[in-house]
Length: 387
Image 1 (cartoon, rainbow, N blue to C red):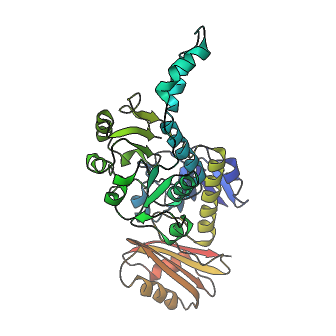
Image 2 (image 1 turned 135 degrees about the vertical axis):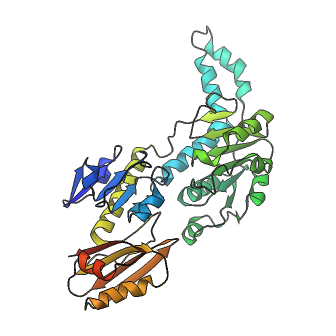
Image 3 (image 1 turned 90 degrees about the vertical axis):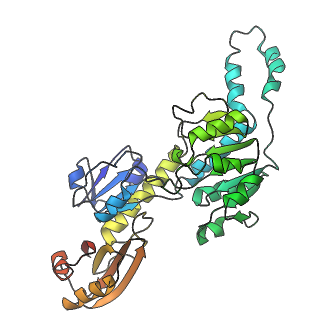
């Protein structure tokens, strides 16, 4: 029996994917896996029994990813599971800005008690006249699952779309409409856009990437949309640009004290992935990732270890998480040989500073046996799975 701890409210549809080998627990110290949404885990301490954390969503800035890697805890996310939900809200944001809908609705609320509302509407509606999005150019920064979905949908609505992603994957390129050009720098993208939507992960190198310098590259009077992460935009520089008219509207899913109530800012209360369907999809994917790793040692959609899979275990599998340093693979295979075990199948993958090795063997062995032969620097965690 495996123990799974849940932080936040996890969709029952996702929890329903857990088989009878799993038990939901509130005891973090006894858990083999954790399912989490947005709860802050950065200061949490983890037990040695913890194998993996699965984030039911794409962003993992609430999880100490690097520390988890050092401790041999695989961190998963669920890319693409909430892509449609975010895409739909981005499109709604574009329409909100183009047609001045929030200001118009607020003004309409003020008509309560007016003796002739219809007459007041006809007299006052011109102040909210907007523009159509057809024929306007949308720039999409970041072409992951969400960015590609936004780009394709906007093109179908009649917008001209330009993508930007210097690290676009083959999968993303395949899914992107073949009529959408992709440029590899913001210098090529920003001067040509009426709207810009950003969809990149929050990390040190992307923090504040939208600032006075990148804003200076933009066409005057654009609308900027941020449904990705708050840290991507320098709020002070954005407010200066709004005050000067350089940026017409800033539409964001991340309200804060600086932005709420400011002229030109449309704040949405972090609703990007807040749909029943997205929460179900994310929870299902997270649960399935956890089970596949716990039961088979396979890694899919990890943010700190490489993708590595030999399919279901049929016999005995040795799973090793280790630092990506020279001679580790030979040390692992040598340890198996020293135990007089035959290797049926082997897969070794690396990602940055870390690697994963899966070895299917004849016979049986214990984790202690393997550890005795692999007592060397760079080995992080050893598991033996038998079925």
